[in-house]
Image 1 (cartoon, rainbow, N blue to C red):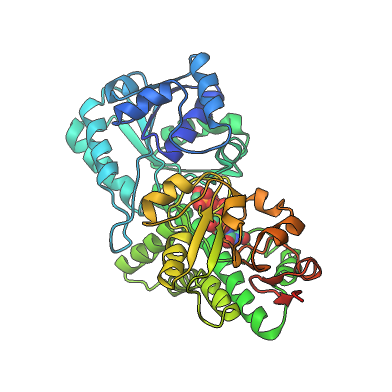
Image 2 (spheres, protein in one colour):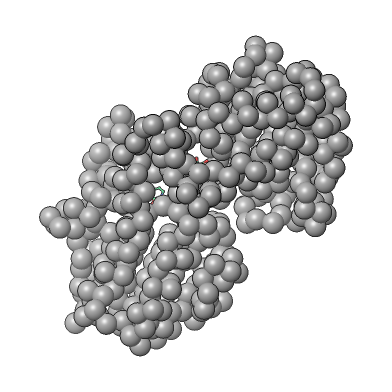
Amino acid sequence: MNVCVVGTGYVGLVSGVCFSDIGNKVTCIDLDQEKIDKLKQGIIPIYEPGLSDLVLKNINENRLSFSTDLTEGLKDADVVFIAVGTPPKENGEADLQYVEAVAKSIGEHLDSYKVIVTKSTVPVGTGKRVKEIIASVSGHTNFDIASNPEFLREGSAIYDTMNMERAVIGVESEKAGEVLTELHKPFNTNIVLTDVETAEMIKYASNAFLATKISFINEVANVCELVGADVTKVAEGMGFDNRIGKAFLQAGIGYGGSCFPKDTSALVQIAGKAGYDFKIVRNVEEVNQNQRFKIIDKLEAVFNNDLSGRKIAVLGLAFKPNTDDMRDAPSIDLVPLLQEKGADVFAFDPVAAENARKVIPGLNAVENLQKAVNNADAVVILTDWPEFKEMDLVQLKETINQPIIIDGRNMFEPETMKELGYYYSSIGRPLVDGRE
Ligand code: UDX
């Protein structure tokens, strides 16, 4: 099939590359000339393992091309994906100006029948809006609209797409359903065929549910700390029940990233506009926002509420490991607050430092772990990067000024940390103090 993907952000780029890798001819379109020039050479603007190689492979095999010219992409396309950004507005609502602009351009250039699919996460009802725009601009209705939301995770985006657990296909005609089912056949996955509004809702409900699991376990963790229980064991005990499941029960300092914060607040907005108060999701957001500040409480507890002049090593800035994405990362709130409280912060992140500097003014990000921890009064873990787990804890103790670790991601076993002589405070597990 011939596929055109408009928007080369995370979702657009990964989808485009994967659709080409399973044998389609894909043209990816973006307005940004510089970005397109780089993509043509396999230079990827984001950090995503394996993506650059897959882009180059499919360019070389003549299935993937990049252009700023929408007419070129639309020519011969059977399916057009709209995968441009829907950033949150001040009030939490998704900003649809880019989606609407693309719909308008598609309308201006539409010549033959195409299935036009929104892949961006858009409020319920956007499909209809896109249809109206295209129909009014093009002056005909020789097209179908559809919704095909994306469920990929950053850091494992290619794996998630190639091994998708389901493809949600929301359509308004049988023909469009057949085209999109055919396109997804090589993924050998469960197809959920539905109407457009339902498909749009599935995306929000899925992300809000996952966010709910995280906030739920974080509240369980907070209670565990008060009653002397261990949240990791509680989660394990819960997870064996298939109805609950093991995934997304890792307590910590809460979720960040480009999806959960945005989609939960958009869902609250969508419900509100329809006259419904989505109480659970509102609380999920509030719990998540508060959870990150547990780090500060824990640090203040060990330093008698006075962080001034303390050298604090912050390990991890990105919202999760294997990404340089800083969107809604807890570090954005925590680093400035530590500095405000007089702490001397030395932060290290394997790949996110450059992006972090753009969103954390006055950030002191050093180039390696050693520089961050050297003579630190306490080490604070904000992101569960595998390389932090592999740290030599015996050597670390020699390097730091005081053997104090505040672990926002529960990376180590409290008992082991106690034996090694650390004061170790994590989330929802017993506080241990092995210092002499
Ligand atoms: C998420 C969804 O997983 C994906 O399906 C959707 O399309 C986009 O949003 P992503 O934001 O890339 O993907 O990251 P994910 O790996 O899901 O983690 C999100 C956040 O939740 C991270 O900050 C992570 O640290 C946190 N998290 C995750 C927890 O705190 N506990 C968990 O048990 C799982």
